[in-house]
Image 1 (spheres, one colour):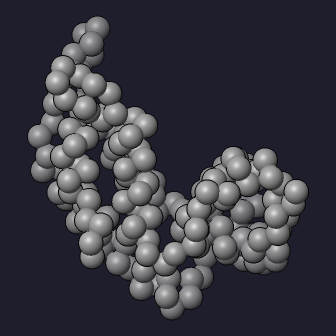
Image 2 (cartoon, rainbow, N blue to C red):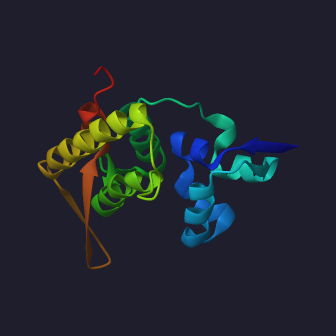
Length: 161
């Protein structure tokens, strides 16, 4: 099965970074393809790998970000003592990388311009709040790792906006 889709539709579905990394392998090639915005063919395997088969399009990018963070917490948290913790470095990196889903060379329509502006404000506020959280330090083989409490981060997410 082949799926035909415009490159811009992958950006709108927050899949552009995955498409460039797993399918194209080149940011330069991705920029060219997105600027041309001609229909591309994706195989079923490629679609499955980048997550196209399980996603819907919405301009509610804050919801997409929150879902991304919940999935990250679910997959990357570890039980340490009585807490479910996620590494500080992992969390900080994931939050920073979310905006890579919307490349600078993409020209969004008016709906997405506002949604992106709201998303950037939300992420900036989220980062400030995360920095205020208590850091749990765990020593393993003479190396100190810093963790956040996953439950506290989940409580910070605002799904009703």
